[in-house]
Image 1 (tube, rainbow, N blue to C red):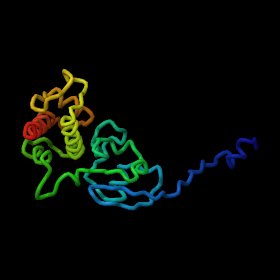
Image 2: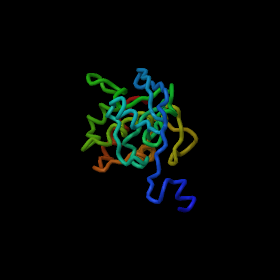
Image 3: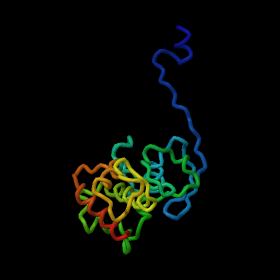
Image 4: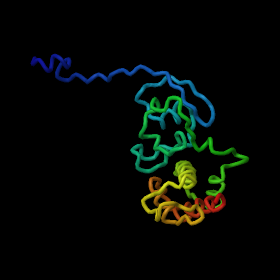
Length: 191
């Protein structure tokens, strides 16, 4: 038997998966602390859904292309499928469950309901989290690719500006006009 085959354990030997021991981790999610022991290769999305049973955050493409898994980490929106849970040890994570309560939804959640900003609803948690981050970006006067001028006035937020800022969140049902309408209504109320 050649040397390479001997090292692999024979011609038909299956490669052995390496064992990654669980790591201690503190996740601050929606104002609550969660002490976990999970493998270093577990994504934040899988930790939220499979370990903590916070299933509002959806697994869409699992490749960072659809935005269904969008959550807020320290106020910034991220695709939770593209990041490892251990990378967020001690950071503030907000999921759609942490934005409002059933009896008192977040203004953005209420706007999505009032404006019919969803159809099947699968992308809605990611859309809402992304829209909440958009509100903060507007308050901080952060420019986007379509911002004109040096500063952005919340009262003059255009539909193109909203579409650009929400471009990382896809809706397969095509509820975009009502999503834009919902976001615009909240921005105008807060201006």
